[in-house]
Length: 269
Image (cartoon, rainbow, N blue to C red; front, side, top):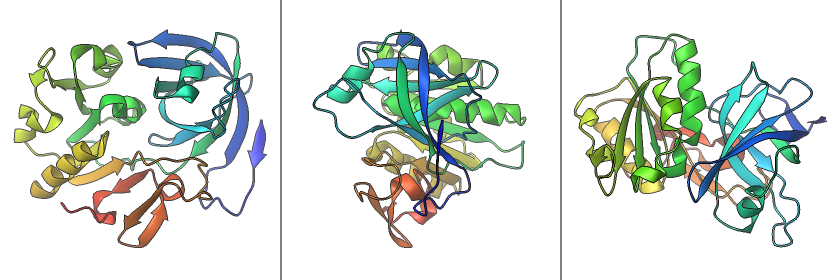
């Protein structure tokens, strides 16, 4: 395990370059799979909303690391879970990993979600597509402090709803699918649960979805945080691939986010 020490890092949490061993690989559907990774040493502290940068070995077309959200941290088993969508040569190579192989990872990166101090707050965690990934660890963390989260998961069709049973063990799950094959038909913003208001909303997924959730949060005076999915090639704010305009000016999502309160963003909501 190599500890990174650099002036480029502005966060209090230390960053590590570490080789992790594949404990399990589970195909969730044709396009998404789950990696369960471990180390001989205790994994570094990680918080919900942070991400890792994975080195892809054995792919001649892949030169840069791939950013992947932290899906879950099982502290008892000393496991890090990564939910990966096959989107190109890099992630396809990751899907070919076998149990026992190693994966070089930089972690933990970025800032995570804020955790409420009032356990009585009504909390809604919204995920669209693979944007559900960070919501599992966030929900589990909220449950540990006494909060009972509600999840609103959106997908194109029933087979695209990922880790449903894991979410159901943590909180109340509501589902929308575009074709109506599971849950309510339509987008997450069409679900009847949005007829009520929440103290705080967390969201991750396609930008149009997050914009719609942000508008709902504004209309209902709900605090709202979103996890942006800008392209993050380096993870340390050096390459400037992931710049986002905020009320403080342009910032790198990988180092200043990926989680932002919607009041920090210049979205037209």
